Image (cartoon, rainbow, N blue to C red; front, side, top):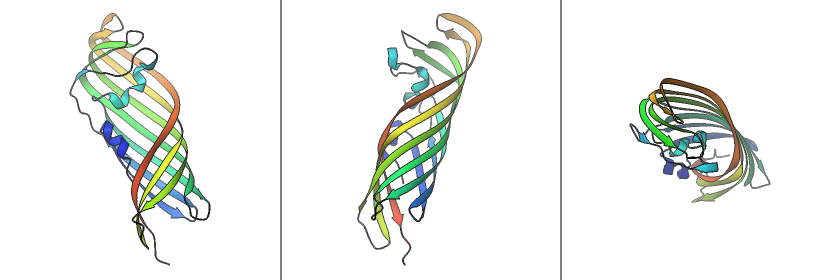
Length: 196
């Protein structure tokens, strides 16, 4: 399965699942390539301007993702499901000029190296529908919604630049950032059933 809405962010992932009765076990692998060699980072401002929450809009980052999930289907037709997902994502860029300015919060301007390690959990409910359903091969769409929790371990280094209003030859930052938020979307995929 793929998640088409992630293509907007230049983020590409593929998931594979194995049915075990009413359960599935799945693996997701993803990659988001960098689209900028340097420059200004745009995103939210004010209360919505936490730099740690701007990753998807930040073209300086590369990212890789690995995730594991398990679904449980309810009902006779195996359409409604609950989905438990664990994932790890690594974001990074090295020695790129970067500028970020949130008037009410964090800001910097200088040569930067950054790394973020994200550990996450998603608790989802959803519905599967089929298109072009055949005896053993089908196209499937999963619609889902739920909640996501993320803990980020951040390491930012600024060389010869400003952090807030102060100039540093070298400024090292390490911290953790926890967030919780809604999840919603859909996946499109191919399903192959063994003939009985």
